[in-house]
Image (cartoon, rainbow, N blue to C red; front, side, top):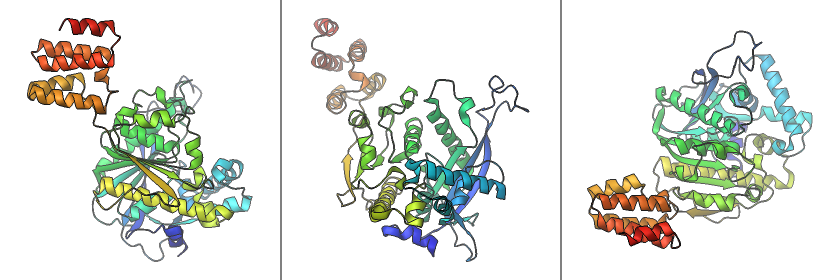
Length: 451
């Protein structure tokens, strides 16, 4: 009953399915952490291969009444390599409790040693290796494997296959010195390894795939969607994406215009204030329909929305005067996430992400259709009436003026090619656009005078 109580706090109710969990270990043979140059004295160096672990939550048949529910400590040990021995569990419990005490950003509130250890007893609604309920389910992959286990159970109970994919151990020997941005790349590669493993999973419907994450995991989810077109939706919970604190912009695939799928971003007031690039960068995701959810309570901390804070607030119930607002914000966050996924992956027209409530406000930013590239423009001119293409081109300039096609050199090159292939009207329209956008350019004036 206590496990069920944890998912019904403040209106957060489990779905109609029981939840099963399975763990699968593997090796990503495209990677290596043991460099002979960096670790010449390490015995039995492994030339390639990184140990990995896949955790899968799935809709399950009702478990036996005596089947043990997973605890928070069980989930903590899923991040540890090796068999689940009593010694490993004790070490993992000691280290996690110590983290909760010394790192207040994670711990939310000051904890005694006894309280920190008690959080590890927090139960879940999931059972290990319970027979799955037959079917094909939309897939949600977690951008960070250790932060959203309660979310994973909640979504699985509502008919989703939720996957956590991560590497085991320390990846620092794989990262070039001085390249901090390489770390997100490693996590994205772990997620891609996980998606590859799901190709053999009979429960997975990979045609309906979303990526979600909390904090840095929200950024990882977004990066995955930027370079994997199979991802149909992305969500970040208090994700620190729009800030100078991260150096991920060095990654070649991290470009706002690469995101072409709907995005849900949920932010605490503190996280919104701390993102110094938000106003400049958020509008650049113009090819993505964006649902921006701003929580209203300043009492809600970053890890109140993750499984670092969840056992403190829901299990111990020691958030003091903030308790009610924390529970309400957590329930609202999970409910909005479910609505968003139902909308994007299940096509449920009644699932709406909107509203201005005492807990949050939602702002929707519609997507813009991207302007064509120069190559796409020429292909359209060869296949469609010239007048139709010119009208579409003018509309694209209104809706997407920052597109690459509308740079000065691109416009002039496209005009020259259109003229050389006999598309005089299109060439004239492109030159008119160049004159409109770059009136002081001698290069443009010269091209217009020669047409």
